[in-house]
Length: 416
Image (cartoon, rainbow, N blue to C red; front, side, top):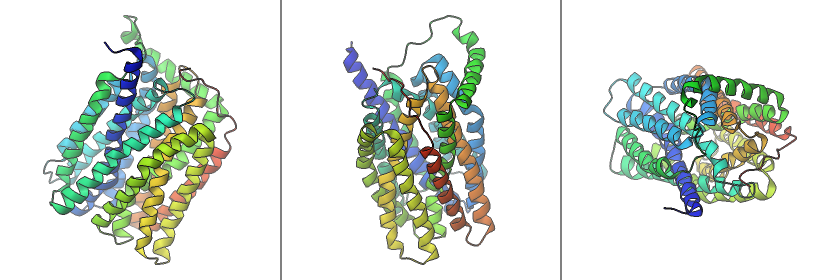
């Protein structure tokens, strides 16, 4: 029998390890291999990929708040994470078979994307269970830093498997699916949840209770100026960062003329810097505060998008993209290291899962709008991708302005 202290350490380890699988999905599948599969192997377009992301995000948009309410009601995060992850893994594994119809692959990708986002709602709520006010930034930063092992594995699959040994992208889907399943097992077994509801009537009543929780959460968010502004800010900056991360490979191929190997190597450089900087941001959050760190991160992202516009417009050497990879790597982990503690500090007891449901909802709504706009611009105008990046730059600035307007970072005590 594990002692309470040992149990907490194992719970922490399992929570951090899950981030590796989450990162390899969004880096390797969403940001790299699947869009390349659509364009290079299936002869699809930006819009095929973009509209699939938009449709998937629309589904997430509809159900995310209710998933957050269920999370608060049942208080059993690990089963929610495990069930959603298992469905996502199964879908992306099936997509790895020799599919000759693009639509089938797009549907399977959409299913995996939806359920990984659902798993993330349960997962994010777990941060408050394994941290305190004094170490929440460091723990979140450690998870982000170690999570980039997943991104490193994704790049190695591309460089070694796809480029050197000639594996097709379908096999890379299946390798990543197996890897996600492997690293998610510890959380499904060892993560220490809150006490589950004991009433035998809990499950028959869960639907009505969830609806009550949902509408109570809506009322609270609209009555709280700080959370309301935070949600608006998250819409704008996640439009920029989420969409930019998903289309960076296609932007490199179509606008910059980079090869898939060059894109993978630039990503590798970014991952190398992201791992230590994710942990560094965690230390800074604990020392400087989550709001200030989020402002610094968004300022850096504005510079990244401005650079992405200027390079093709002024015909600068593509060698500058090595600097781009380093800068993105330094900034990427700082976003979630800063904004998750900020939301936790603003959220009242009993509404944390609900808050993370809306946290997810705003990001997914932004993603839906952003991917739709990208798909329209990139296929309509001669320099459509550059114009699309321009919208990412502007949305980052709006998000930054909103964060500056948050006047109170909250006083919520976490696991004192």
